[in-house]
Amino acid sequence: MIELVQLTKQFGETTAVDQLSLTVARGELLVLLGGSGCGKTTTLKMINRLIEPSAGEILIDGRSATAIPAYELRRRIGYCFQQVGLFPHMTVGENIAITPALLGWDRDRVAARVETLLELVELPPATFRDRWPRELSGGQQQRVGVARALAAEPELLLLDEPFGALDPLTRDRLQQSFRTIRAQLGLTAVFVTHDMVEALILADQIAVMHDGRLVQLGTPSELMQHPADDYVRELMATPLRQAETVEALTRESP
Ligand SMILES: Nc1ncnc2c1ncn2[C@@H]1O[C@H](COP(=O)(O)OP(=O)(O)O)[C@@H](O)[C@H]1O
Ligand SMILES: [Mg+2]
Image (cartoon, rainbow, N blue to C red):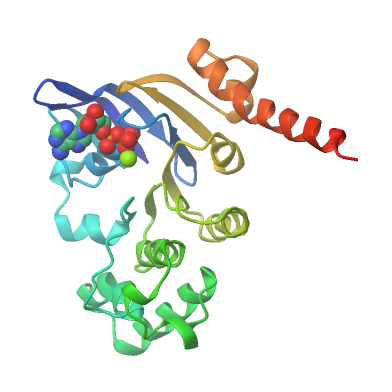
């Protein structure tokens, strides 16, 4: 469904994304994984044409993204930003309703959709629909961001560290419910994270990035069993090492 061909973004001297080529099949969730500054956000923004590539191409269903009108991209692609960016002068419900309203959905349909989505991200509509963004915690704002990205029933979802500001329990719950939602809706998604465990839980395919380049693309088990280099090996070893540390601590307790 999406194909990146030699995609490159230069910011002055910095090559943020360096000849990145990969494909995401329909219904698949691809995780872009890598440390801070490796080019994940820039890649995601290029897919949605928020940033113009310096070179290379993005194909959506075989069509160059530059040939697709902005309104069509907005309808087909849901985007959940790293800095959530809710509009402060709009309520939670109004924030979620932005794209459906722009697309001319009737009021009842919009209201029903807002209701469904708030339930989905575990923010009871009666409590949260009419609140202002400033009246929410960081984690609650992130959940509204996810709901807003899903609002217009997009076929493609781009998520930039959507669960980054959540406490571990909520994060775990939402990761599980996100798996269910995705399966139900048959969504194609590109999910950015620097969290190994999150990548393993959610991904069909993981693309490991380092300094703007693609280091390895594979399923979680392929990456675990056959890491392409020391960087991937190290990355894959981290969750297991942490689990062992925790287990050792548990054994030491009286
Ligand atoms: N608008 C910009 N202007 C200049 N440099 C940028 C800009 N956006 C990102 N960069 C640089 O590009 C690189 C990749 O950034 P980014 O895609 O945000 O990384 P990530 O999301 O993986 O943390 C970083 O070195 C960053 O400083
Ligand atoms: Mg980023």
